[in-house]
Image (cartoon, rainbow, N blue to C red; front, side, top):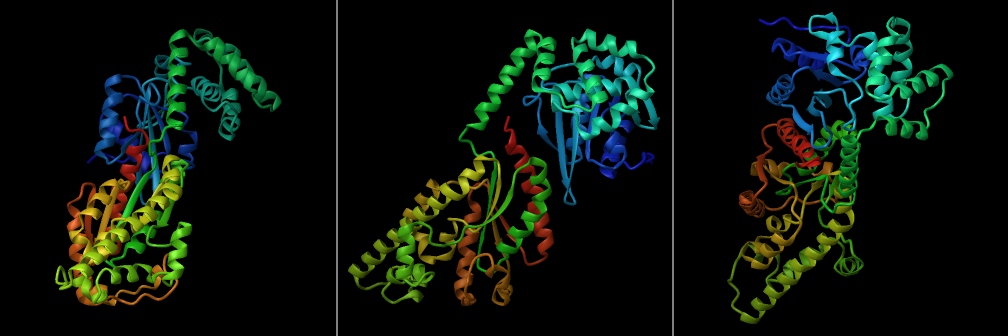
Length: 473
């Protein structure tokens, strides 16, 4: 059995990753990791001497259920893998060079030559290299002296004995003036100005690095003004009482750490029926608010709501034809209302990278109204309506549906108490919703066993999809 690594207050997930690389005999160096050893962070930066080890480390992380978040197409010389577990994010930055924004300020061979081993598997740069790495990170990545640099750089200055090494490294990479600026700012407790950063960049950059930075900036601008949905949309549909609201709210909570990491919001959104447009509000008031749908569906069959369970049995051809016209108008009315809400309330947030967890969706129209099963118009509207990234159809057994407490859903959707539908109506709803599971990117789930198990399954699926959508290369 392989011994477990331990070092100071290093978080368990991080120490597992370090142990994984150590036991596979990869040659690495842990840099900018002082805060990790103190248990203050879950972001590990690790440099590899060999290209083969760098690629092997990525494969090992994928095997441990990490997901590639930042590929090299986003930033040259490094990759970032992340994992969501127990509502916590672990981020592993794999580096094949010491570089930021494609700029290499240090020679990694020297870093491995002077490396220090603090414990089995814990290999870090020398004091001189640690100081240089923090200084380069300030100049070429953060553009300011943060709390971490202000804490550790003065400590390394006290321990350094070979100042000639600092000078040789920075002169070789053409940023010695930048190091002098850092020392001056530390001594006088001053902030670095934008003009000083620009001056260092102009001295440091070669033609190859200039071209790379130009392409990176252009790609950033194009992505920023792209119409592409950068966020993710997950829709929960299903028979009344199957646990859609509960599951959607739990999923929102489970994904919050990922939202904080990505600096984007995770939103619960009730996408069930509510009047949105001025004309819908006017018609809704005319038909007594939520009774609008009931009135329209009743109007499509002269014998009332119960006739929804009967098909093509009208003896009066004119009334039957009028019923079909009402249904088409009903579907078109709903399509316009849902599309307007999507365009105004959902799509702009998806463009900004937010994650929307929709409790109900336009597809519920098919499951809620049995008369929809023979409608070619509704099928066409489904194809035209913007599709979620994934749709989850929730279901449970009929006895549970008849006992289901609706109070948890009231504060999110309905103002009035909902009455449980007849068992026959619920049974038809179940059949209709289940038939939708044949659609692409749709998952059918039974919630009757354990709500937490269902939520965990959905969470594990959703967070990976969210990460994959950020940079779809």
